[in-house]
Image (cartoon, rainbow, N blue to C red; front, side, top):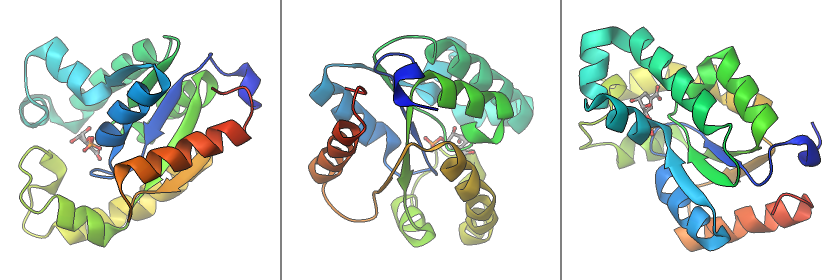
Length: 180
Ligand code: S3P
């Protein structure tokens, strides 16, 4: 879909856990003067429960229902940067909301890097397993094509400082005129 048809100024960050969606999203929003939102944080704020607790009490399906409602609502705003949870793109509706309502930026990172970054992380229920690599590999295989299917821009967050990655994103947005 041409950039002009998308809701004015919305940038949606997608990608696997620990790809840098929240860190980069916050700074990108600041640089561009846009409001920043994070779908996970929004869910936690609304429920008063952690993501771990929601998964434990309602299961992944319950979390996905909440995630879909939050993404539908946030993506209807204008001029926002939205960091989505890594699994948001699993739902057809979410892919449609994101694709239709803004410019979608896929932050790509390797499995090795995700494992290194999440080694001591206790906040991501899907990785609280004995063998996180065995969990992450099929997730990557299943999700990478879905991320790519809706991405307007793909940027690697494997190396480089946050500032450099933000510059790469803003340069790509400038190339796609009308999106800034
Ligand atoms: C998930 C990623 C998490 C969070 C939840 C499920 C996933 O968000 O939504 O733990 O399915 O990949 P981050 O991508 O911000 O870690």
